[in-house]
Each structure stands twice: as C-alpha cells, then as structure tokens.
Length: 197
Ligand code: ZN
Image (cartoon, rainbow, N blue to C red; front, side):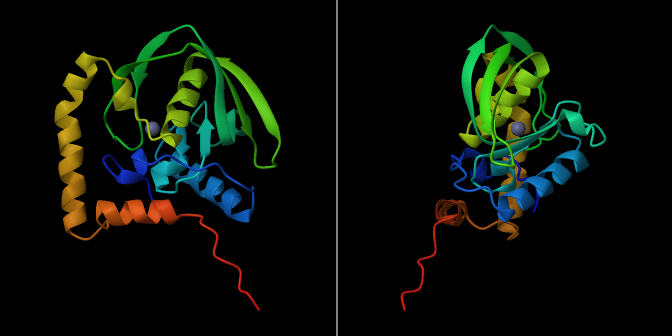
C-alpha cells in the first residue's frame, strides 16, 4: 500500500460508505495510520491509498506518540459549519505544495469509530481544517479546488510537474491506465455472488 499522488484517478473517485466495520477495515485503518505517520502527515483518507471507502485517519498533533490526538472516522458527515479561517494547507498527495485555503472556522461532524459507535465533535481552527480537508477527499474534492485564483496560479507549475511524473510512471508500467484504475475502483467491494448449491 502506498500514497497515490495527483493526478491518480482514485483522488477524484467518490468513496463508498463503509457497510460493516470488519477486520479488513480495521487493518486498513492501521496501515493508513502507519503511512500517515511515516510521511509526517496530519491526516490521510482512504482514496489517497486508492481504496474508495469512507474511512479517514487523523492526528491533530501529527505525533504517533500522542495517541490522544489520534482520530479515526468511518462514514464521516459534516453537519454544520460556521465562520471562516484562512491558512496554509498541504496534502500528502501533493508533496511540497502549500497554499492558502479558506475553510470554515468551526465545524460539527459526525462519524463512526472502529467499534461502530457514532460520535459527534465540534472543533475549530486546525482540527476543523483537517476534518474538512479529509472529508473532501472522500468526495473526490481536493485542496487545489479550494484555492483562490492567486494560489491556483502559483501552483500551476508544480501541478504540471505532478502530472508529468505520473504520466511517466504510468508509461513505465507503475500504474495501469486511468480507465483500468477507474474500473477497479468501481468494482471495489462489490459482493461476490454466493455459490448456489
Ligand atoms: Zn489531502
């Protein structure tokens, strides 16, 4: 498992709600936390590892040692937002790219934890920014979509470089074609028909 970078099609593919919190989902969450800490990120959403399910992991301090700052969200929903904050944001799928992004200052979110319990959180500032950034990933929205015209202009060269790198890797066979990836994403989690006996 690895973090896919822009413009991998998984980043634009809407994730499906998790239908049952089973061993597979818990294993995925653990692997995502490891990848997030290994890459010094504050958050990671399943589409960033090319798995189209509504699962995301965060640590508001970005420190593996600070377990109390760790948060896992299954099927999260943003239920309220208030105010505005503006600040620099980055993303593990766009290494090295930082730009100002406007977000709501305070959010109310609802999600399930890995025990299947529903919880609700109200938070502001950085945690609120993180929740919004990661929930966006689950809907195929990226922080480059949220940049103002100046930020977008300043990012253009780096985005072109990401695109060139990805196409080169694809030509070398590191990734299947975009259509083949989208087909895999569409088929992910589809039930295998039970054998009729
Ligand atoms: Zn991101």
